[in-house]
Image (tube, rainbow, N blue to C red; front, side, top):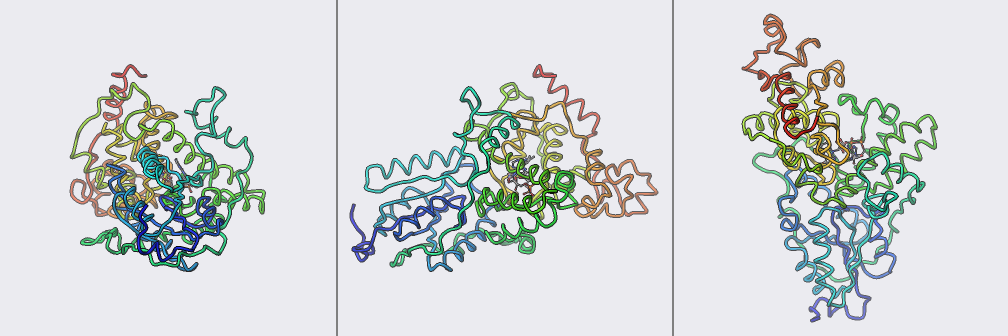
Length: 492
Ligand SMILES: Cc1cc2nc3c(=O)[nH]c(=O)nc-3n(C[C@H](O)[C@H](O)[C@H](O)COP(=O)(O)OP(=O)(O)OC[C@H]3O[C@@H](n4cnc5c(N)ncnc54)[C@H](O)[C@@H]3O)c2cc1C
């Protein structure tokens, strides 16, 4: 290989290792970075924004905002160690080749990803450097249990969560996370990189993210703060409270985990330590670990069944008579369906980049079963608007609700958006927060304002069809249509 002038200056030094960051924007408990640092050779960390490789799964708008701030945080972390994070944008293989040429590096280390496009990219990187004198090494670290290590008695992947999780837990506690040794040998030469601001990842004109700085703190420190506050408060009532969106009993860690700012092993061990300090918390911590388990399971499924994001896992659902209805899709996206619990969720999502899990299930059920709109339309909207958009969790979540997934909720279990609201938003705090036009509505009618007498509506300033919509579908009719659609598949 021809050495560039920069690399030539450095002749005599040990050759550097490139650490290629992907969805692992942290420095602690990152096996590949740990190995690079431990080698004693200089380490050049880089991040490449490659919008071509993922195809239609390129990052959505909300994730881009998170990425910007997460990279700022990662660059600060490296700066505190005297190391520069190199940023480049474009096609990954050629940019890595360029970086090797610029620096004379002879190794590239990275953490694996599980998305089909990302696995293809790993193979391309391997192939590109196989002929050259450059070592390419892949490490784990983004999951607690690598998909190949968990199989059933016939050696096949699991398709049902409970036995999968039992098998994971049978192996005992995962290894203790390792912080990165304080010293990374820095590369003495400047390496050309790009300016993060030039990537324009944050929205402008209009800046719909203006409030997000008050709600979110991307980066490892923000992730640790979320875990700490959860273990002080939310954990004590997690099993019950996790279903009540107004209570904020869950961690809100999902965007941090999606970007790999904290390792799942670290979260696991922090939760375990809390249970060790207070044995009364053991049951709550087990429930919490099982939710991390669903993340593991989704990735297990995506790895073994890579077309899950694109088509129904259960074959018969590939014939489902989905409707195309732009008007209803738009009403759902905007939180204007006339069902307050659904509208609250969709507006929370738009305004905060997040939606509580219980409400995700309610809005997804409404789209697929009340409106009979394809789950992929919902998954696409979530992809663009969720800060935690993650292909494994999103695809599994949607297929679970739609009834077409591996270990799915049965299709005939159709959430009633009225009773779901009454049950999981007791007191109506969540709806009143996100649908302020109903804030003065008495509890009795909060989930079904169309049943309120005209005098009540007038007294609380609600004019249906004017400042809040009539329901776009009737619950009973929609339920009957959904069951008829199911029957057309021969499923009952
Ligand atoms: C239709 C639908 C779409 C979804 N899309 C996504 C997505 O794109 N990205 C995403 O991270 N999650 C997704 N989920 C799963 C879940 O809603 C979120 O992970 C959860 O709401 C995040 O909140 P939390 O961090 O407070 O969760 P906590 O209750 O604090 O759980 C801790 C962590 O466990 C994981 N987790 C919890 N519940 C689930 C679950 N059901 N499936 C997989 N992992 C879980 C998450 O990483 C979460 O951060 C989706 C669920 C549904 C029903």
